[in-house]
Figure (cartoon, one colour):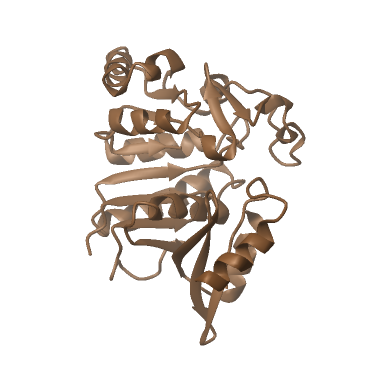
Length: 285
């Protein structure tokens, strides 16, 4: 089946988050663990490739993103999504911005948007500032992350040193006026040469507006233990099953001739009784 949307994610749990949300549409989703060795075959309408590049140096991250893009193009994808962490984990050098810019160049587009919002899981953006629940990013536990401490909440400021093109904001006031208003602002910013646009989103309805406004863009840009587990199992593809918590599904694969059920959960997602909920959903399935 021809792939409609091709996605790549910078880690394994982020890939399952995205695959889970895509599966809500009732359309088949395939999650590939790493860049497939074989050319596309028996593909799904939504294909997601899980990379392991969140903390990789820029050249390595860009190379992985290019390889994933090439595979998704052969699969027939016409729209592409670059999934990075909802807390925008990165350094002043990237690699979120450099990967997005490399994909933009490969796809021949002069503008893309950034919206790492997930209101259902407490990630929202207001006036360019990323919130984790009620806390600005720089006040959240992410401020003390051992590899990528996030000491600034403003996504425009975080993105500017990572990219070569201008960065600007489409704020909540524009989004609240609907898809047409947001589309007009994106077009005006493009005319001004703005290549990278951060877009506010504080509620799920905002995400619908943003999706409608940017549907003509070829690129949209919005778990270490889990990666080690899937690599140890030697699995290259996961099928997406029931959603346990927002953005966290059961997945299914084969390893060593055995059918295996996995759930790959980001440490930030799920409640204190997540594992009990997971077992209950599995019994139902």
